[in-house]
Image 1 (tube, rainbow, N blue to C red):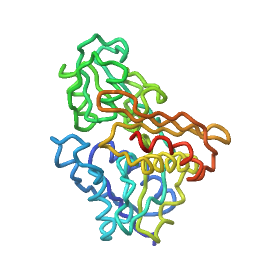
Image 2 (cartoon, rainbow, N blue to C red):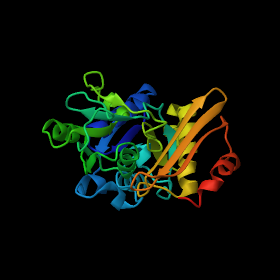
Image 3 (cartoon, helix red, strand yellow):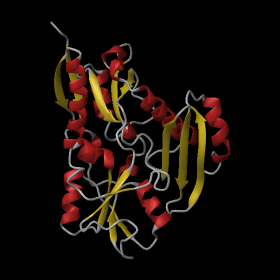
Image 4 (cartoon, rainbow, N blue to C red):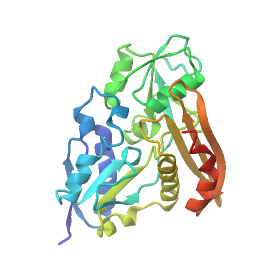
Length: 293
C-alpha cells in the first residue's frame, strides 16, 4: 500500500491550484494524497498591508508549523512569500518550474500602464509595486488593495480602481489569462518580487525525498540566487525591492533594483553571473550596494 501524503496549503483558489499541481506530481509517483487547508495570519488579518507583517511569513508560518508538528507531510507555498529564515526543522525540498515572473497590469478598458490618464487610481498593497509605479508614473494615485485574485478583479470591475496589479503566474494557474486583456510588464523595468512565479514544496528535514523528484534545476538555481540577494542586502517585503534572475546559456542575468518609497532608485544592478554561481561571485557584485539599502 502506498503512503498517504497530507498536503498543507492555504485555501484561496490560487493556493489550491498550486497544491493540485503538487498533488498531480505526487500521485504520478504512486502516492495517495489529501489536501488540508490551513488558515494563515495573512488570510485572517486582511485589513493590514503586507509590509506590516515584517518578514514573519504571513502566508507561510502557520502551514510550516503544522508541517513541523507532523499534521501535514508537505507544505505548498508561493516561494515569494517564504522568508529566508525557515521554521526550524523544515526545508524547501523542491521548486516547480517557474511560470511567468512578470507583473500583470489590468484595466477595465484594456488601456496600458502608459496610457492611463494622470490622476487615475491604481490598486496595490505591495510596497515594491507602489514604488515602481512612482518611479515611472508619479502622476497616478495609488490606493491599497488586498484580497485574492477574484476580489481584486471584482473591485476593479466595480470602478473602485482604474487599474490593478497582479502576478501573471497567478492568472495562468487559475486558467483565466487567455480570456483576460492585460499588460505584461517588462521584468527589467518593472522588476518583480524575488521568486515571483515559483511554487515551493517544503518538507521536514530528512524527508526531502518526498518532494525532491519534482525539483526543476534551472528554476532552483535562479530562485536561490534571488533569495541570496535579498538575504545579503537584508531586504524583504518592508523594503521596496525587485530581484529577478533569468538563465541564458551558461550565464544568469541578475537584475536587482532597490527603491525609496517615493520611487527614487537607491541601487540597481544588471549583471551576468555564472550558471553555477558562488556566493563570493555574487557578493562581489553586491558589495557596493549594501550601504545604500
